[in-house]
Every structure is written in structure tokens, then in C-alpha cells.
Length: 181
Image (cartoon, rainbow, N blue to C red):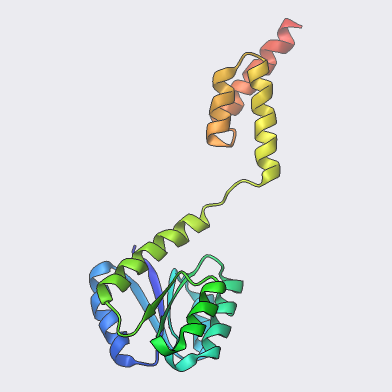
């Protein structure tokens, strides 16, 4: 399944061009301009990328970006703006906007950036182990290395977690050590 996009744009012509061009990309598209509808869509559906036009929304658009980034931090926002509102573009970038396009825009470039934003969201969703978990893994790996199990230590550091297979090996080794004592 392709990415899911929410378009917040007053200009229906731009919306329709984006919808037509995106059909070949296997994208699911939602459109809205009403804040309550935007919140409902974000709550009900997993949105990957938001295209947000700042031309009419101005400061209301900044409030939407803050709300989206607060409630859905991995959602990537791409703003569309006119050249006379550069301060809004700068403010949006400070709030974590993925990219900013000025009108008139190149649809091919926009579509390319939407795909890159989708990838960035997927990468942001990868759960990284906490520092504490990583330190624990390192200490366990060091214990294996010290016990002469260098391969096990390397594998543990490479995977970052003990696999079920490793757990069985560890349990087997512990049983053997108990028998030897």
C-alpha cells in the first residue's frame, strides 16, 4: 500500500491536479479545509504526509502544524506557500516541516518530495532501543565475550536484542556450567 496523504488546500484546482497525478502512485488521499474535519481524519486514519497550503490559512496554518506535530510527530508536513509570505515558510520549518514549496510549483518535484517524506516517516517510526536497553545489551555482550563466546557477543551487539535462538543457547550454556560445578 502506498502512502496516505491529507491535503489541506482551499484551491480546488490544485487539489484535483494532485489527486489526478497521485492515482498512478497508489496513494490514498483525504482532502479537507475545516479544522474539525482535519482532526477527525488524523484521529481516524494513519496519515503519512500532510500537504498544507499556507496561502489562505496563514497563522491558522502554523497552529495546524503545531497540532499535527504534537499529536502525530512522525507525520511529515509539506507546506505550499506564495513567495510573499516567506516568514510563514521559515516559521513552518522551525516547527518541523519536511519541505516548503512556493507557487507556482512543479508537480513532479512535489510528488518526488511526497515520496521522500513518506520514506522519512517510515524511518522515524522505527523504534530504537533506549539508551538503558543499549547499555544493558553491551554489558551482556561483554559478559559473553569475557566467557569466550565472542560470536554470541557480536551477534547480540549486531541485533541489539537477544533472539529466541540466543536465549536457548544461553540457557543451554548455563545448564552445562551448572553441571560442571
